[in-house]
Image 1 (cartoon, one colour):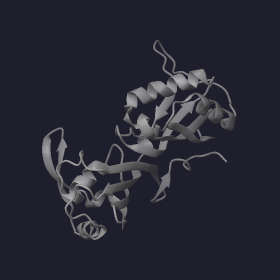
Image 2 (cartoon, helix red, strand yellow):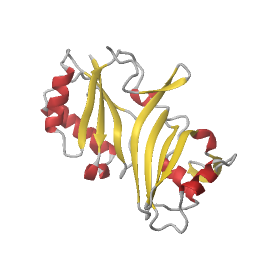
Image 3 (tube, helix red, strand yellow):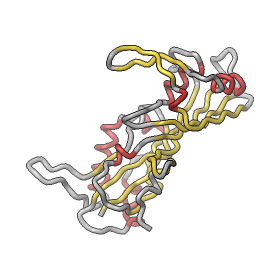
Image 4 (cartoon, helix red, strand yellow):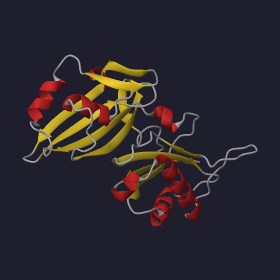
Length: 230
């Protein structure tokens, strides 16, 4: 039986790295008594698969994990048992059965949605209008560090949707962009480009990953609807 979990990662646990999150879930699955299936061979591994890793320090309300069980289970009961043993800041929002195939969860990810809130503290002239004007340009060129060094890239083709709002104290950006192994625009590179800042680490801002998408029938579909059994 193959089930998909959608979970939140918020608060202090957002500073825990991806490998530790994997180990955390493996322990939680064992403690919760979920009958996990294992790979065959001399070095069997629990059949637990994550989607795109989340950057350390970033909140999320749209993380995903697939697990394969050795027997059929009640999804609602499994969600409750896991939430009872998971650490504060991680909560399973949905747990449901999906159709079994050999496609890895990580390879499905082709887009991501983020909410970015930027405090006006630390910026001389930050407004929704200045960001909108920047986004209207034909190209959004920036420096990107890769395996072969630094190169100039245009991030404009990587943007799918972007809206900007403003309050007295902050600017909020809702960003949907290509993500995954083939083409990927991180929110950090996006911010570096539109804010003309080489380093945004010391700025007051928060980034929350809202959703992950795969491409189906010329559209982007959230992973909590893809191949889900009714």
